[in-house]
Length: 141
Image (cartoon, one colour):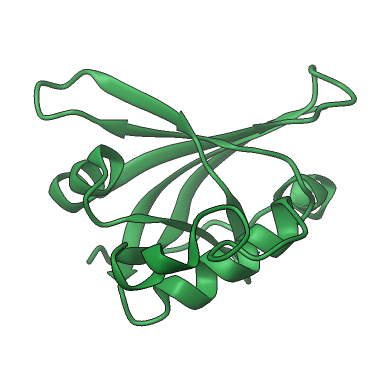
C-alpha cells in the first residue's frame, strides 16, 4: 500500500507492544470523523500487526484511508504511553486465521476459534492481518 521510511519503536516502550496491553486503534470514517476501537496487536520488527474481520468498519476505513494511530497506555502508570502514527503497508487474508489465533493466545491464553468464538465461525469470518508501518512515534514516561 504505502511506501516510505519506517520509524523505529524505542526499546523503552516495546514492553507495552509485546505485553498484554490493549491498544486503541484510530481510523477515519468516510465523513472525516475519527473512529477509535480497542484491538489486539503485536510487534513484528518495527511493524505493528493487528487483525480484524474484513467486514468491520475499521477494516473498510483502513482500506479507504491507510493512515492510522495506535496508542498503548501502561496499565500500571497512566502517565506512561506510546502513540504510533502510521500507514498500512499491507492488509492480507492469507494468514488472517493464524494471526488471530496467535493474538488470542497472547491476550486470552486460549484459542480464538473454538475458544472465544464458535469453531463454526472459522469458515465464515474473513480475518485480515494488517501491517502498520510507524511514521511518527510519541512517548511519555
